[in-house]
Image (tube, rainbow, N blue to C red; front, side):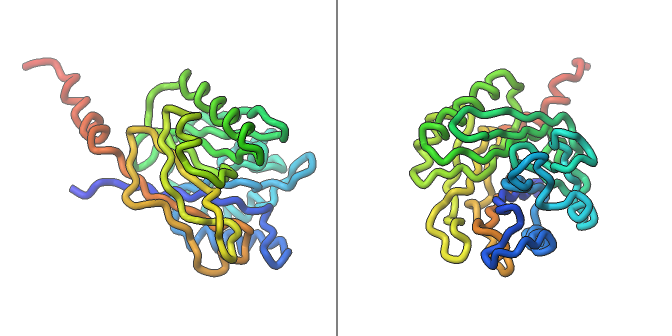
Length: 254
């Protein structure tokens, strides 16, 4: 039997301003459509100044077939589609459960969003974030996320976002013990990438079918200063077996 998969993308939109200095949300949506992801975790999806109106308009995203998860501080229909610039889009078929956001420590205002979803893989927790520019802030922010996870149920979990880390993933692995970071491709700056800033980390329940990869087809190289990075996930064999056998184990003996 073919194992079920789910493809997730993370992308820093740079407020839909491309390398040509044009704000073009239609071009942004073209790239997202070309990626073929089931779920997209976005950074810099809102404009910078209060009330932080959406750089990627909600109605345009919905017209392109996306569910816009209502993280905005004013809820559905409000000017923002996210929290501290973080947002998520999902294709139809993904069922959205509870949504949460978390302020993160550091010199700059930073935050994270968390969605509890039902997907083709079953229950899935997805965390999106955009970490700070200073390493000590990034480590504090990852530690805050680790403390959050300690208080939550142990279910398949993905962390995705622009982590602003130019160094080795081992630096981040030590800061958030519940997740393991994947090696990621260079994705910044988009015309000639030098840094692997856009990353994924997985709980032990999940495995990647292949290493994360950057979407490089035009207009991705001009639509933002980052390239989208994608990963296709499956349940780890031990998790899949446990999910499949649990109902049998609960049956009363004949």
